[in-house]
Image (cartoon, rainbow, N blue to C red):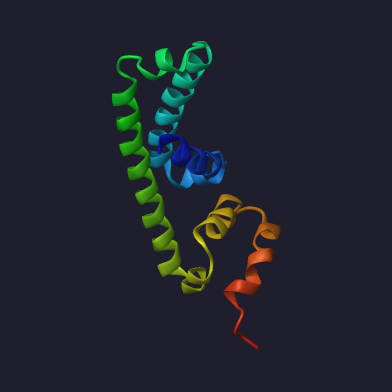
Length: 123
């Protein structure tokens, strides 16, 4: 669960604009990121899956990381909801599409592929 959520959020929080817009969530994510990468580095150095999987403290660390990532994901969804309330046409976009736009706020060209979804029914 940690790996799946981490992979999804890692691409989102690698964008400087998202980090700037969500500083607390970014801090929490990068705390988990550091811990996760450290554990994965140590797993790589242990040839035995049994040895790596029974390392004391890792289960608790993964549970804590999972809780943090779930909280970050919820806060991210709340943030996207505020953006949708400010501009209701964003409801026509998926979370990933909206994040792509918000992650590149200075790049007008990034918005272009999504304009048709926002204004599809307008003649």
